[in-house]
Length: 249
Image 1 (cartoon, rainbow, N blue to C red):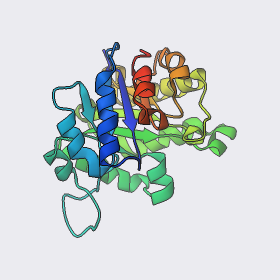
Image 2: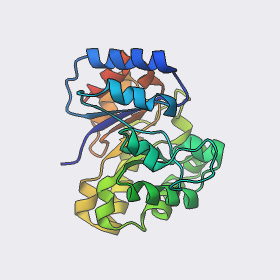
Image 3: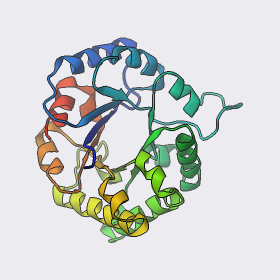
Image 4: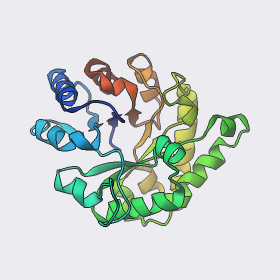
């Protein structure tokens, strides 16, 4: 049975005190679902978050990492550095990394390989822009984003992969794909993975939806057969909202 996951991507928000306050708030709220809870604070707060989350059922992810083991890469963070402070999951391929920082599929392939080399779990993001959907090319675009970056992996490696569908037109805009649109894409992706790797890999693959998920719409989105959770942006910055989404399962 595939895992249900709700991950909060804090992006470039919160200093140390705010991080501690939000984590304290999360710890106080009763979790009633069996979904795994993951939060991804900024790099500067990962270790303090790790310390604060000991003996809880909340785990940590990094928002990004460099594709090299080490070297003269001023300002970058390696997989080994993340592992050394207890971070075993990394978000890769987020649309903001692609659009703003120019990360392409060749670079993301290197990052995927490095994360797996360091035994890290990957939350791999993908999704179409509005023009792709308007032209009816959303399946083709998404299929290529996954194939070009992940299909060189063997089936065993997919045990460390979580996919996150984030329609670019629904990130930070207040717009949300309808539950049926989310289900359509998640079903398409699962079928593509099944064609490439077989039913066992596809059936055990968690596919998250990311794109303006809120407490008000989480239940309907998560009720869809192929939606296994969410990658949450803005709503993850408020403890009550985030845990309401977690408890929507």
